[in-house]
Amino acid sequence: MNLSSQLSSLEEKLTRLARKFEQLKTQNEQLRLELAARDKKIENLRLNLQEVQESLEKKSGAITVGKPEELAERLERYIQQVDACMEWLQNA
Image (cartoon, rainbow, N blue to C red; front, side, top):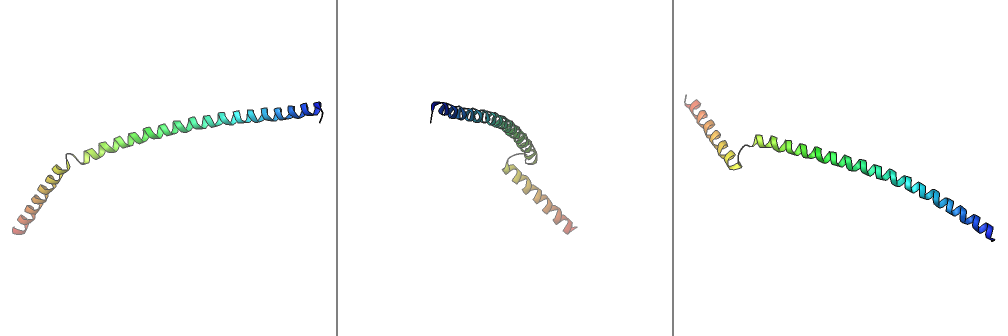
């Protein structure tokens, strides 16, 4: 192989390599954009989840006012009152 053909072959390889480099640069930029969009979406979902959790905590707090022991005592008093009313109705 003479010098001219070796230079030509080297030039072709360099051209292919430069094209491949440009393709990879473009692909890398696209992947970076996709990653940024995904990160933004994850952050939005995280914020939405936090809002839902806070809302749920507020709602569950409204339902169970007080400590579980206090709630059990209140339920027991209500049951006793219902029992007393039923007994009164039976005797009436």
